[in-house]
Length: 331
Image: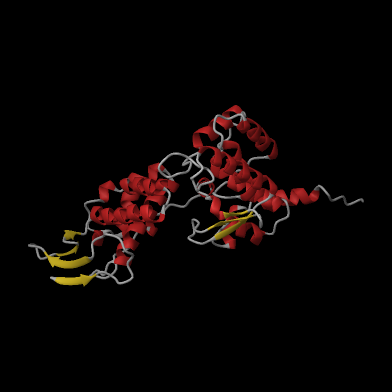
């Protein structure tokens, strides 16, 4: 038996802390983690336990944990396989048979979840066999470039008019804040009053999707909605620190999806539009209003300028069209 110690830089959470390499009766080397054979199922259980504790500790979105679990469930036929036996050929064959029919995006998300699981084991466990192989990249499918959809001015005006009469007191302000700041849905719904500095017209998010702090400038429209929501909070939930205050266990509104879809239906909009589309709408109008690409990237909190350029490449034609409206070769 060869002992392997847990890495010193591991975060403080309850997880298996030893890995050993033991020989079974058939003389085949078997990697064991916490005394159990390191099957994919066992590694997934370790990874999910880590995510569950991290979700509680850092108040992360429960939806993220649920999504990861669903992606990992699709790997069920591979669960009994020893992680040391996960070859590129085996993963690719599995993906072709079980994941490809689901489409490229779902295929790649499940493989990304598997990749994160393997990386977690490699990062926090000193395995005597060395790092586990991560053969998921070879099985990923090519995804067509995303087609960015944004809400046009007429549709947006109709949506806001309908939202004003919605049964949800939060819907109008959610839409208004989203299209005027470009914030993500979770960032808006999870925002706390302490994040807002009305004297400077900014909101500071202490930790975003990328793990970084982000400062968001507030225009008059966004500021007005925030002030109204705080008054609503003062009247209904005076001790609640959240802008979108609620009586549920998280203290804030978790989802706006149902009322949002009703709003689209009443607005007569049949295109596929989600709350996230409002973020893309904001980015589109930032660029069309003359904001530089690096300014839009900063406001939206993209990890790199290249991401902004890729996501909003389609706006190049819109910007050229806008400029042409003021051009006349004769004048």
